[in-house]
Image (cartoon, rainbow, N blue to C red; front, side, top):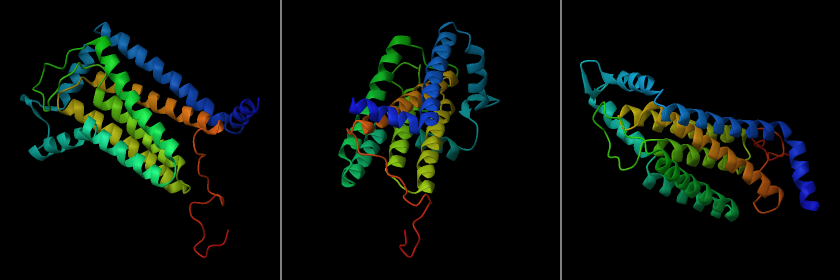
Length: 250
């Protein structure tokens, strides 16, 4: 009964935020389902083809738009969504949280990252969509196309890490900074996959949707675990400002 009271108290104090997150989670599931249905029926082919060709030189589809350094930059950005980079980042963030004595929150980060990777693998095996064949691939690929693994796993990982790091930070400007950086990196990784010709645009859109939904689910789960005392509570600013006064007065 005491645990139920804690959960109800949390819902009552943050009902708007929780309801918005729940509706956003349900919305992401609905959008993904609609995209999957359209892709399966082949109704997105013309749109995918048009957007993909927009990122190619008009007289040579094998040449991505922009000078050579832009293509190299695209490969660098797409690496931010690779398994090696995401694994290293997850381990480093877990180390940071452990040093801050938030070991259980670090465990949530581990579960979130591994879970998104597993979910993406299952989805790819379910749909088995072929990779784009209109243009040469600018990066090595080994799996099916839908949904984009780089887009989904990077969205799930970066958005989850951004949200959890924001919980561990008391200054509002840094909370916003964590979330903004996570969103920007997620968007750039997805765009780079289309630019390099290894994914259809709808693959990336589906990956973003599924990854964002996963991150929202992890955020809601973390809040629920906090109410049960299983995860360290969120840090809040006691003075309600971005910074504590420089003279140390509360």
